[in-house]
Length: 253
Image (tube, rainbow, N blue to C red; front, side, top):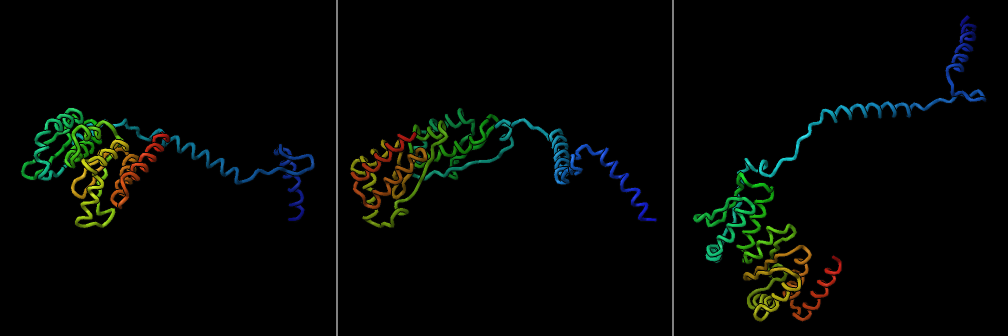
């Protein structure tokens, strides 16, 4: 009885499938769609719906101005002043004070007890990096650069200061160290001025320390020339190599 029941039901189901499924071929085979494709379509539809809901709920905040970011800032930058720079700082105080206050909108003062120059943001400060620019400007003057050269750090964004010691390149002592410093400076500062003019940088020699102000590529050329002089290369050879590298870098840009 069970077998006869199955035989009577199977043809009915097959006929129903033939009538309902339009994808049946002429040979009698039925095309079945893949289950993976169905799942992917359903998942993509769900993702579209979820992303649409999230985009509607996602908050949109307008960009904040620099003064609002710094209005509650109590950050203070301190730059220590060595004794040999007290007099130049006193003489050029107004040249330092004016661009820091008028251009960067910062507050500046000289702490007599701590012997430091202190910088702080004010209500009128609009740039986020104003404190860093002010610190670099004052530090450049403290290291020995002229105010006019240090002002370039405020006007241009691609200028940096790199400092190193002669003994970092080669361990020298006594007269050997003095001769290395003399080779960098040259007679009457001729070698130093030549390196500055060719590489478009500014160089300060403070005992065994060397400070270079300029762009990244120019600092690299000047540093290589100074290191070659410290290692004992003659100035004429250094001039030739330096000019060749400078002309190649100028042609690239």
